Length: 517
Ligand code: KIV
Ligand code: ZN
Image (cartoon, rainbow, N blue to C red; front, side, top):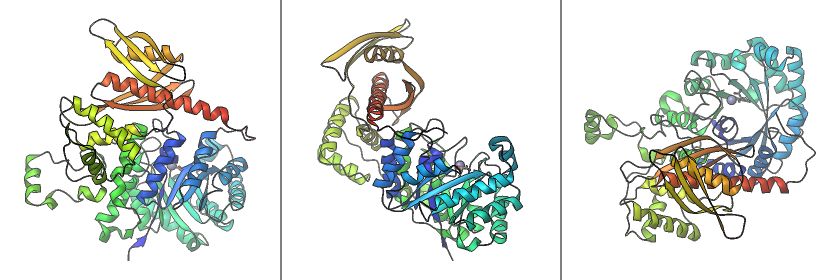
């Protein structure tokens, strides 16, 4: 009989803490709403002790997203637990997720405490967490490399103090499936009270085994899996939500579990995350990669034409990939545009439709055929996660074999427009130097990636930027058939976010807490 498995999504915590995946609180809230639509059961919203931004974001998500359980992470420290407890206090259903390392390696070299100290900290932390909520999860970090007898002792203590979910992570992606499953069986057999709690798997992908290990844990009795969209996360990432869920859907006889995920929201969620972070899954990534449903080899295409089942185990529509690509163009009106967005799963409000239609007309002047991917790029560009204080009004570049020159005009938090010229060893560098001159702030570019939205010479180029402005890491993105213009607009997007963050910081009430991990 198929058992229900709880899908615990940690994209906003374990996923977001990995380099390159940083999101602002507004972006996190937008993703949290989409994760809700996806049907996840538990949403790990952040680590409130890490920073004031994390605390604020967890609080906001707890207040705004009402259906899933909202979890917040805390170390076994009083201050961490209190901050996390307060951050989830507005949730419909809140969970505190307490963790401590249990392997001798981590105890000796990371925490520099004894096994007895770790046991005592576990007891007091779970007890303290229970003051805030009845839903307390305890994680034995590096469980897969922990001495089994000691692991059982720590887990027994956590259950005795009132933990309701016990998570046994493969923190460094070291375990292999048979071994990881055996650990769950052994701990569940040995620990008193094992049948009172939910057992959870949390796997990292350092050996590419995170999905396989999660499935092995389910087979060994785990009732919850922790995973992330697109498999993002520390180092090689976490177990991928879409892989675990689709494995269960495609192979129900072999895997015997079910979950409440609405698979038709998978592609939309994956795309939103990619747009927000600028990190797209590799083309061959299972389920959500660009090529996951492409059939290139002639022999495969021939088979597909006879019968789709020959080479396709999942219909693209099952995960929400739009079936046919309807082409729009210069003469398509608002109604055609609105209808296509509706078919792609987006209901647009009047004002937003108006704005996108304007951009659509401008794009149609430059590009003959507008495909679904172009529409998605326009849509994601139209979400304003920060007020548009800065606005690019003019850009001209001269480039060639000599140093490039750029002339830029910006509207900003000043009257009228300001302009400047800049130079650099390419047109993008020149435009960035002029923008930096106008706003009077040094800008450090950490990464700039360019992606063509559709094939063809008139393709839209999408630019994703990671910059540091006044010590803050920010992302910006924009799309245009002109990649220099897209880059300049992406930088203006990041500047708007920096300006918004400065304002929020200035207006934040002085807190009695000090953040920092
Ligand atoms: O990988 C890990 O062990 C973790 C814990 C904090 C649950 O992310
Ligand atoms: Zn982890």
